[in-house]
Length: 206
Image (tube, rainbow, N blue to C red; front, side):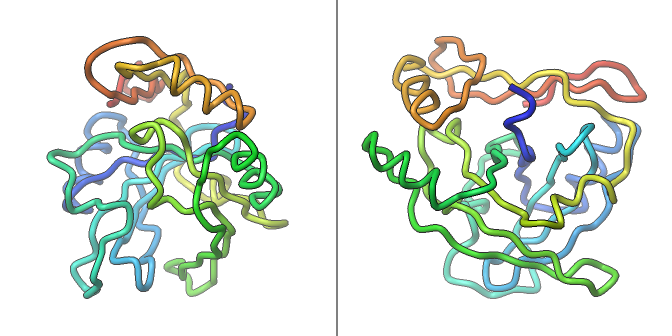
């Protein structure tokens, strides 16, 4: 299923602390990505292999907004809490979902300026729509430029992405309707766990 993954999202209350923790775990230091204007967040990134990357995302104290993107400020602790799937046609995926009773919200455009001043742009389904307790991804299309993985620090490789949920059949049904799959076990807790090979060895990050 790795070809389906665009990136993983690790939420934290403080970006610098998130960078330090991932650097300590992996031996690869994430680089600052930029701010998401109007959404109240900023991020740091590192590569996870071919066309897949890892995003540390946190509230941006320099922004004043009514609502922090994806309710990041409500996370009880730093965690791997969402994932994004690659798509070349997000509106079509949304229509496919609607035909199965799955509403991913409106398709939107997004952008942020990179540290070098260049503009990064994308189209995506609404990440604020939290389906399957976060186990159903939002979809993103980077257009002809592709996602930022080639520019990011290398050295880590995503081996697998696994999850647990109290109602795995319900989540699997939604994933299947959207043309996706995820290794999913039944447990009382909802978890998302990435197995990543790093310069420090194999880690499991939830």
